[in-house]
Image 1 (cartoon, rainbow, N blue to C red):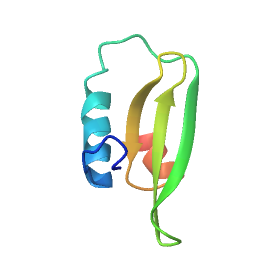
Image 2: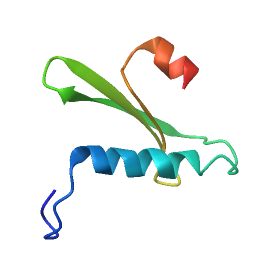
Image 3: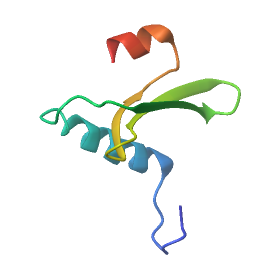
Length: 73
């Protein structure tokens, strides 16, 4: 993440997205969401991101990609 000349770690970006997602609780429910997973460490540990596609906002970031984490998130 050095495209803007500001070095930022992946963990910092995820922490910022998680903080922003927790502040969106006072908005009406999302109608259209997107769910994607990515690898924290290649072929070892995965995470899940949930996005409100209409508002283009991160709703939540889950620590894994299990169905249980999605239902509890």
